[in-house]
Image (tube, rainbow, N blue to C red; front, side):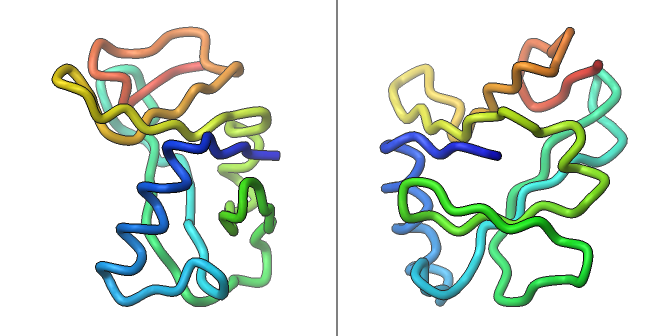
Length: 109
C-alpha cells in the first residue's frame, strides 16, 4: 500500500488537471529505477492506462499504480508534498530505504 498525504493529494489533483488528466479516472504512476547517487531513484508521472502487471491502490482519493518490480521497494511508502521556501516538491517517505541522498530523490536498501 502506498499512502498519499493531504498536501500531496491537493498538488496531484491540481497538476493532473493542468496536464489534461482527470484524478477521478486517471492514475498516478509511481516507480523505482536504477540511478541516482544512492543507487535507486523514484519516478512519478500520470497515466491513463493500466499494464497487466500493475498493482492498483487508492488513498485519499488518489488512484496510484505501481509496476510489480517497483512495488517491492515501495511497500509502506507515503507520498508527501513540501512547498515552502525550502520545499522540494514531492517527497517519498519510504520506510524500506536504509540510506537516502541529500536531495531525497534516490535511496538504497
